[in-house]
Amino acid sequence: MTDLFWSTWEIISLIEQAADQNAIQDCLINIAKIYGFASVFGGIVPPGDMRNSKTEIQARAVVQYFPKGWGARYVDQNYLPRDPILARLQKDRNAFSWSDGYRSCPDPDNVRIIGGEAADFGLVEGFVIPITTLDQRTAALSFGGARDDLSNRDRSALTFLAHFAIGHWLYLRRPNLTRSKPLSPREFDCLLWAAEGKTDWEISVILGISRSTVTKHIASAREKLDAVSKSHAIAIAMRLKILC
Image (tube, rainbow, N blue to C red; front, side, top):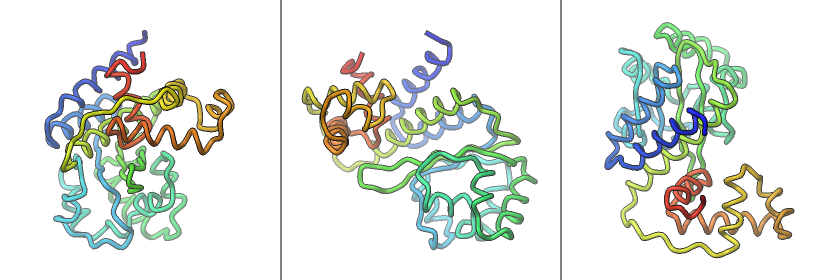
């Protein structure tokens, strides 16, 4: 096994042991530092027209870690509804870089002002990971720093860790925690192939079932494992030795 593999699972173990939001925040800050980032911010993505209320932001956030002064500046200047990254998150569920978010922004003034001021605080480039929850809300984590020179391998590992951290955070916020139910043979097969990196379509070909049936089985497995995403379900299943 590679050092990256073991480092990833050591971090997952720490996230899993986190008993509250503060502990999860500490894990995410540690992850940001490991991957060379100076900031990490994230939680439930607000609607694009949400007022920039500090209380509202805090209610949705799992982590707010910035260079000194940037968080207060962002709130004081009411940048949230104008943020190019938030605008991109309203329509894109794939991971993207800050520069991609800036390029897709229809208002160059927002890019110039917000991107320029962020750069003054050392936040020039970043990597954003959207996560769709079981109830179809969108969560996201945004890592920022002087540069983003992650390899594709690092991006994959960081994306996996982000899904697991957000999943555990949302799990802790649930009013009623239930015991995991056993997976059906078909749910197990679908999750096993998903853990191998296969898409729903590829799994449908392998198992000789429809793509929609694969999607249904994976969604059911997520619910039984109290997971909020496919990656979260895979991580839980591996921890419980359901997948080996």
